[in-house]
Image (cartoon, rainbow, N blue to C red; front, top):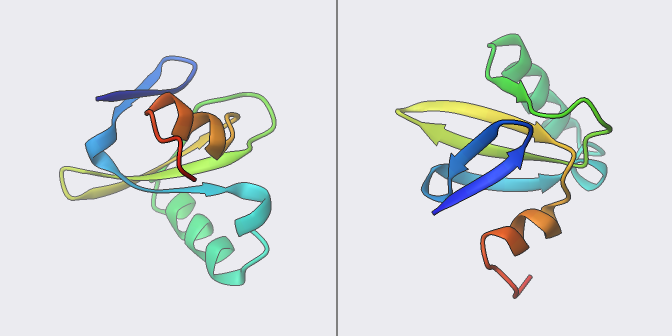
Amino acid sequence: MYLHLGQDTVITTESIVAMFDIDACTVSKKTRDFLASAEKNGEVVNVSYELPKSFVVCEKQGKTVVYITQLSTKTLLLRIGKTNF
């Protein structure tokens, strides 16, 4: 199954490792360090020019990719048919 993250970005749901709400998660220093490290390593893809609401961590061919999107985690879960959250 595929998930549209915004703009022209579509990923496979099998590649998703985790989805995080930016407001809830960036309070933690470990999360901020993870995102800073991913940015430094060129692993971050911003799929929106709007205020980001969530980020999705994916594993693609053994490489980590972090997608930052304007869509909420609730919207993303609804798009893949997950209604129990």
